[in-house]
Amino acid sequence: MPNRTVDDPKHWHDRAAKMRAFAADMSAPALRCVTLKLADEYDKLGDLVASFVAEQRGGPSTVCPNCCMPMKLAQSIPQLGGLRELHHYDCHSCGVGYTVEAPA
Ligand SMILES: [Zn+2]
Image (cartoon, rainbow, N blue to C red; front, side, top):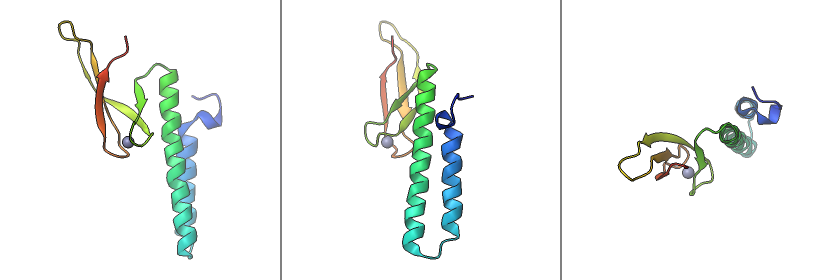
């Protein structure tokens, strides 16, 4: 449980959902469009907070070099011979994936 509301990813995803609900009631297309973009940004903020919290807890995560969104660990490739363990990350925002050596 996060110590502060701003550290809780659910807080930001809930705000995104509220913005989408507001947008559904808007008749002006421009206002609806901007409100939906704000909702997307709240979701991105929630994802970033989740990544930050996981990193603080020592969980594997990183930031996508393509879109700056958090990437989740998709696969660990065990250490083999003299090679180090590898981590493969996938970005759910832009579809980029890459593999890096696991931290020592
Ligand atoms: Zn990305």
